[in-house]
Length: 122
Image (spheres, one colour):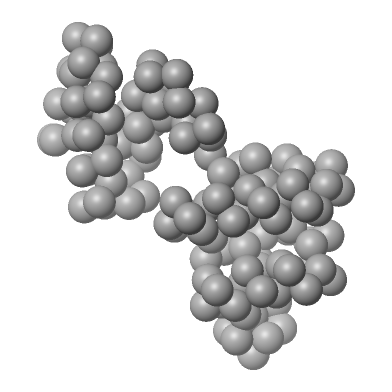
């Protein structure tokens, strides 16, 4: 598989090339776990910590701490990175405390799930 090449590049200290291969793999298959892992390792190896962070995971942490502003900022980052997990925002209990925040509704609207969430009463 092509993502193997990404790992080989990383092991050979060719981090930029490895990252490029991982990103190419993710374009073809956005949710592919091994390629996401390779991408994470490449960003860490390059010292690009902000890019390495799993934005939705960080948003969940901030939501659990009741830090709405930070949680919503990280959801914004996930949207900017086109994270496929944003489609599950409304149904994820990690974000239950954000449902009354109009900014959360605005994010759901941007993702395209607000209309569906209202119709199904999630």
